[in-house]
Image 1: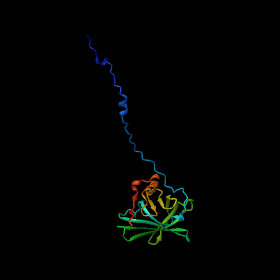
Image 2: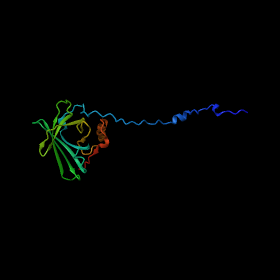
Image 3: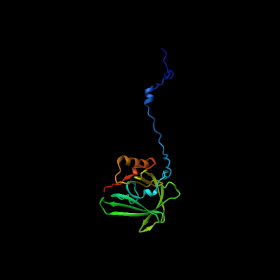
Image 4: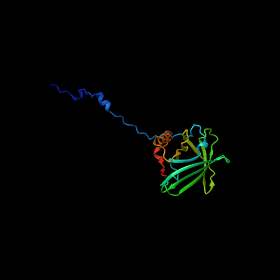
Length: 200
């Protein structure tokens, strides 16, 4: 009987079944590409009456500024008073430090309605230090305002700051959820948004 060389034996490759093909999971492609930067935040296109924004606001959530990053800030409020003679807004920010019943600290600013934005949703503010108004005007962008002026949310172009405010210290849960949904939709990193305890 003649011997058969193994090199003459045809090799038959196994064909995978449909089930085997379906079970193969794609390997994700790793990319070092960074996500495209968000465009600068803009004021709401909704027209509001800035004078109806005057009065006292309770700050419920923030992307904190230097003062708000200090541990133990309670009962933060913003108060806006319209100065008709000078066509500007007197701004008073106050808070308790350490405990809700602590003596309140105050910070002051001057504000102006930015006349180049017809909707009334963009202002400019200048901080006051040692009684002197600094020669800078920071953008103050209203990104949301309730029809009945019961809530208002203010942002900053690069999203580094945020103030979510209401006319009452503790808004109902469903209303608060609606208020927080706006900055999330506009690209804020919600892990940076911190609640402000309101314990009066």
